[in-house]
Image (cartoon, rainbow, N blue to C red; front, side, top):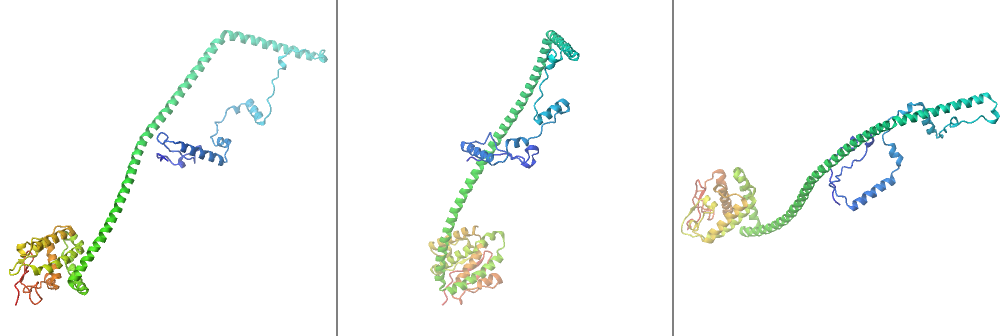
Length: 409
C-alpha cells in the first residue's frame, strides 16, 4: 500500500460549533494516489460504520444549526394558520356564496328582509364588476410598462445574483488551485524526504552488514592472534626453561612497566603506553633472538653501542660485526614495534626497550636499579656470567655497552 502523505492540521478539539469533535481528514488528495483496493476498503469502512451507527437521517439534520427566527409569526393571520397546520386541521374552504346572485327561497319570497339582503348582494356584485372593469382598463393602459419595469428589476436582481455566484465560484476555484499547487509542492518535498529516508535506511543496513563482516574478521584475527601468542608463549617458555622462571620474569616485566609508566608521562608516550602489552610481547621475541644470536657475533673486537643505536635500528653489520641476517632481524623487529605502537620509534622511547631487553637478557635487576636509583653499572659484564661485567658508560644517547668483551681466562 502506498504511504499516505499528510500536512499538519489543527487538532479536532480546536473546532467549534457543529464541527466540534469531528475527525479531520488531512490527506493530500492531489498527491496521494487512490488505488482500487483502497477505494473498496474505504467503501467497506463507510458501509460498516453506517450499519453500526444508531443515528438516522433526521438525527444528522437535527445536529445542524437552527434556521434564523422567522418574522412571519408576528402576523396574527399567519400565526393562526401556522397553529392550524401544526394541529393538522384542514384549511377552511372559500365562501363563494357572496359571489352568487340567487333569488330568495320559495318559503321566504314574501319576506321583506330576505329581499333586502338579495338587493344588497346584487349592489355589491355590481360594484365588484365595476371595480374589475376599472382595473382592466388601468391594466390595458399602464400594465405593459409596469410589467416591463418589474421584469427589468427581476433581470437586474438575477444578474447581481449571477455575478455573486461567479465571484464565489472564482474564489472557490482559486482556493482549490492554491490548495493543489501547495499540495504538489509539499508532495515534491515529501517525496524527496522519503527518498532520503529510504536511502538513509539502506545505507544504515549496508553499514550494519559491513560492521557484521568486520566483526567476523576481527574475531578471526583475534583467534589468529591468540594462536600466534600461544606459539610465542611456547617459545618464551622454551627459552626460559620452565614456567616458574617465566613467572618470575613476568613479575620483573611488571615492575619495569610500572617504572616506565611513571617516567613516560609525555603526550608522545601516551599512545605507546596504551600498546605496551603488544610491545612487551615483541620485546620478548626480540630477547629470544638476541640470546640465541649474541653468541654468534664476530669476536675479537670490541664495539660500544648506544641504546639510541639499538633503538633506531641503525645497527649495521659493521657496527656489531654480525651477519646480514642478524641485521634484517633487528630492522624487522623495529618495524613491527613501530606498527604496534603507532608512533615513530625515537631514541627516548626505545631506550626503555633497551632497558627491557637488558632485563630480559641478563635476568638481573641491576640495570633497573641503575635507571631508577642511579646505581652504577660500571665494571659489570652484561653478556657474561654475573661475576664478569663489561664497562658501561652513561652518555647523552643512552648506555654505552661493550656487547662482545674479551673473554676472561
